[in-house]
Image (cartoon, rainbow, N blue to C red; front, side, top):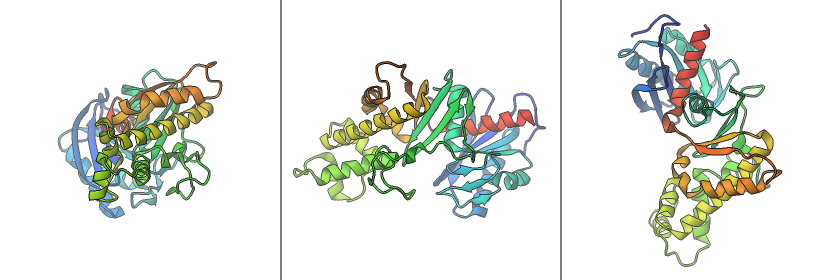
Length: 326
């Protein structure tokens, strides 16, 4: 395995997006460029997952000189970024992942929440460059979020802030996996977009739309991605579902504006690829609902520039920053 002494000039680092279904690992240079990538399914046991991470890093380190490793994890990370408290789609609970993997690899390992990592990448190399107080809203299966305050990632007192997806927007609304009801992500996510479309289909007597035919052929198969594609094709039920999604995005962004007063909001996640369908309407609703509307500056609202690579790039860059301070 090709490694260098910490602090070596132009250090290359590895960033790994540890997802529930796949591990994506990339070699990243100091300018944020991805030089090499490997991918594998995510194992289901803690030992197999650590083995998989070890294998991914060693594969890349066989082709590049690596100085450190950053892991982007969808879960709760301790403030010192060494331990995974809990990750809903991974087998780690109070697991000292950074220590254990670091010992195996002989390299510094740093953990980071996946949306924090993506925010850092966008701040350094993408859509959030130049922003001072920035909120990232990552919309996929649910809503993840990150907050940058004067160029510093805000993690809260215990490392778990900000959980914007679980702000309650509808008292006694749709049940959420977190145990509450009416959370923002239950109305504004890829999952919510599909659920809204199914509700609209159930109330539509004609059953003549593209989505109606798809749902009839394979009940329960609709996804947010498919609803967005149908809206692009002019399906009226899909268009209504997307309009409802845009309404809730605007409502949530107004709440975010009231709490944080950001100068920039970055919309990330899989749903962001369909932003032309909903973002203008969401901007208008945000502008109308934020407290002091018409009498205050509004946040700029952009989509991610780095896309699905952002978490890997950010994790790699954060690991490089920690290495330089070692």
